[in-house]
Length: 311
Image 1 (cartoon, rainbow, N blue to C red):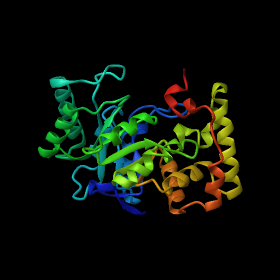
Image 2: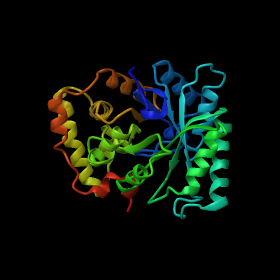
Image 3: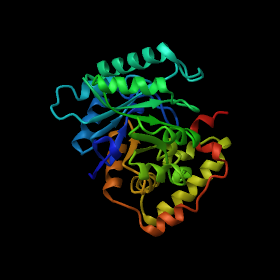
Image 4: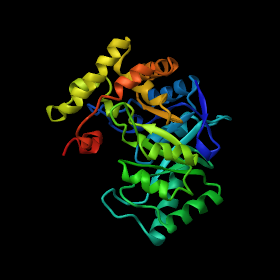
């Protein structure tokens, strides 16, 4: 496993991180139910034993935080756990302001600390931010919780293109940015990701399989998502020519891009985890393969956001 500095946060983390949404709630193509608790804890132990030291979770991910707390309880050298907080009561609500914002964030972080069994969370990311959300009030709360020792570093988990730009315009309190990036979704290569590199902001890449599109699961895509199926078939043809699975190609494209500090793989399967570890160990793709993949495009940008798939 390769280990890297996560931007200016001071955190040293594994290049491959484990996303834990699938441990806490149905997620991905087909929406499979999570395994039972002991299987989830076994998967977390397996990931740690194989060198993964960065685990991404959120209060919104069902029982994920609780499972991480149980899995790593009592360990002297615990891995880095990154969780998330929201600034809305519900996703459709406007951002909270004033005392309501402070109360909501403080209570959210306190609950996360309790479930994770931690005195301090290494990284808390503002989650579900849709549109401009950084305010002086929010920054004050963030700095206060850091001063109290509840949170070591702050980040943001964003969607689309406008939201990460907004974070970078207000970057002072943020040491890390989590964004979607894949062989089919390269929109942030211009602007956002180079800007993160210039500013020393850590980058965690998520959705590198585009919620299963860049895996063998793409075959179950409904007809309304035919453009995604066609694009996945083009990427799969490149993988076949290289003699590797589609998912391995997708992972290596993202993980060894110039932008990745941590590349998240989300799974509830030991078999998938093992396959991802093997793919990462194979290292970067050949330069000519990367060039070929950069020519594959999905014309409808809206399909690159899974939230739009049912609209």
